[in-house]
Image 1 (tube, rainbow, N blue to C red):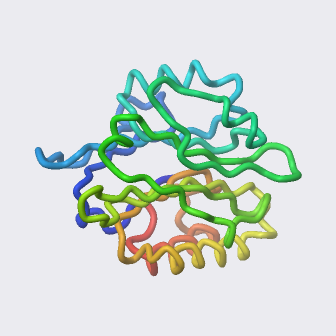
Image 2: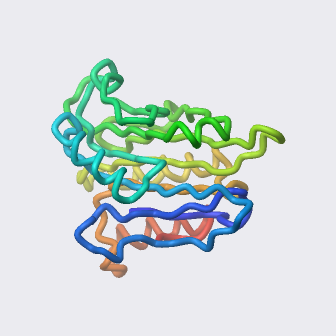
Image 3: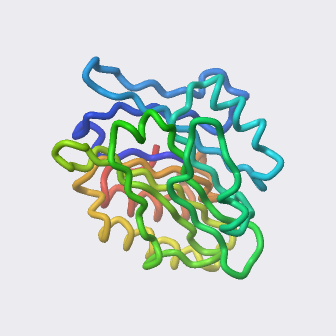
Length: 217
């Protein structure tokens, strides 16, 4: 899952790599302009990052990734912080406090960090274990401090009885972060079938995203 909003109002171009790397056509290219920095984003639902680091490193190298979002890393904060990828830094994370599994993380390459001010977003107001788990960053222009890009990595476990709570929290995130006013990417695993647009879950999610910016992609 990856959705974009207000894409034209930024000095950054960004590409998305779908997490199914079996598809050679999974790369969605944006029109590059010479004055813009290109960010190539990849999301992976790793289902335990501990034994996937070499695999992720290979993908980073092959696809020239400079922004990595992972869901279901399955680690406590102290353990996640020792997972490193060459020339990347952990910029944002969410770890479950009591339950096992779940969790998100955002990694950013050193070359992007050198060019921009990067701020971790505090999602304490919205995160609920096993319902909605989010982390993210704001990338600011170092000169005029404008927001060039908001990146949110989100995981929703497949527990349908909490789906309406998830939607309420997603809407709260959109309003609080003023996503209608800033360029934004939300990626992650929401455990929703986006191929079947007739389902209640898809329609309600799309209604919220359309109210925030442009619907699902």
